[in-house]
Length: 436
Image 1 (cartoon, rainbow, N blue to C red):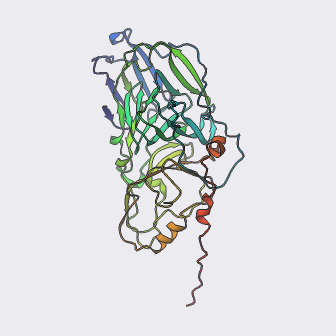
Image 2: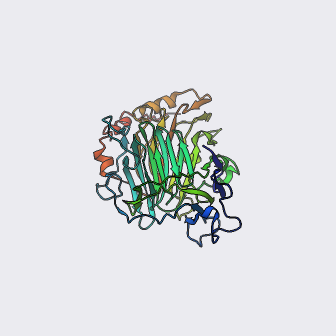
Image 3: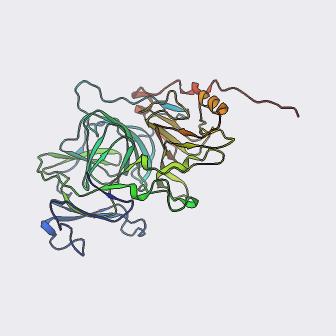
């Protein structure tokens, strides 16, 4: 697979089988090259400021409008946004690894394997987010999915995803992520049981965080983001299914051709992927543990300056060299909600109980921090330079919204660890009064 490099760039791409398929000098000629149809996909209002205006022109064999009426989609019973079905729960929550599809021969594709864990807000008012788990063992055959409500940030934990989009194809493996912006149609193929996490935002689109005093370079560098090149599937398909998420519900429409019929495109509203191993870590080289915001890969800003609807934060391998410092993350109560997942390895602050494929949720003002083993070890460790999180990749979805857990997340999945609170119970009162 081939990719175009850059974040937020205006790209142009043609399927190499059909050179000169992009119109020259205009977007919508009277007759497009190869008699293709011109279709604009807008990711922002027409009158949005130029720095925020995103759209792409697609040149395809048939317009997206050529389909039968949408009907309710039967399937994905636990993929829904009902934030009032459970009473609020302020406790620290930890999930054991979420189940992979059962080995009983039943085929579960990406859409059927979506399960909503928690969230807040309302897609109708375009404000809020949802956090989902996917667990699948089969490819999406003769079907495609798109989200009318917001952007998907997909974090594979097990299994490689072959993601086909209207723009081209991406291969996304564990320790990589991909973003499918609102409205872009895609399908997911797998060759083994696969599992991962999804952050969905309703308010806007994911952008790179501002760097401020860090300067021009660092964190996730724009050149390392990759967008697929144009590629189309030249097939007529009877009863091809187009599945739409609209106002929190799923619908399906049939048509007799694949949606992946885009021969060429140009614009700055695109799907993309990123390899987390390319993240440039910023860290303290003197004293104290820095706030986790220094590990932000992507953010979806709110209307309040410096406050995000959602941040995507990672905790990658790095050197720890601070002097006179308790080096693990500090004990903390936060005005933000923190949902953490583990892609691989063992998380430095809780090596026991927090497993790859599982998750934690520390809600607003719910106290959390290192467990007993981590506290005692770090309090007595010799402070030499050491590698932290080697062979590990943990991440966090952090939000300014107070997240409600679904019934599936709290009960049905049967993965909630009722003993999580015990990891702090053996902490001792070490207070001492020292006489001069």
